Image (cartoon, rainbow, N blue to C red; front, side, top):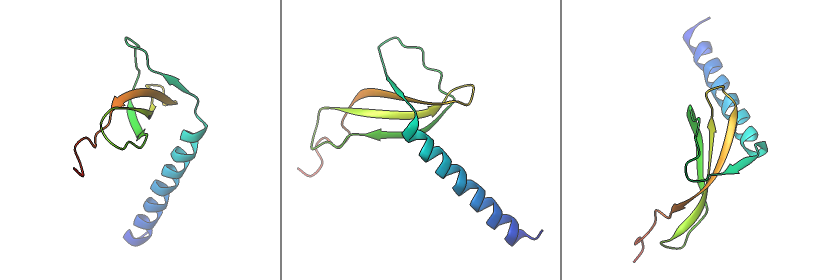
Amino acid sequence: MNWKNLSIASLFAVLSLGAVAASAQDSVKSHSYMYGDHLDIAKVLSVNKALSSGCGVVEARMTYLDSLGKIQALDYSTIAQDCGEGS
């Protein structure tokens, strides 16, 4: 197999894995973070925050792999990152 075919095959493999992870994220039941929770996070897959029109607390969801390779989702509150922009 030449380099061109190998690179194309690798690209399609990576893209298909990303699609599988994205579709699995939608079907994962999330849990809400409570202070003191033990989190088993091996790799963060994505972090999505609610849209905000300024400073304040917003809801966010982190999708991650635990140490067993299982996809988990965690809902938590965080501070908006766009404070002071556009002023």
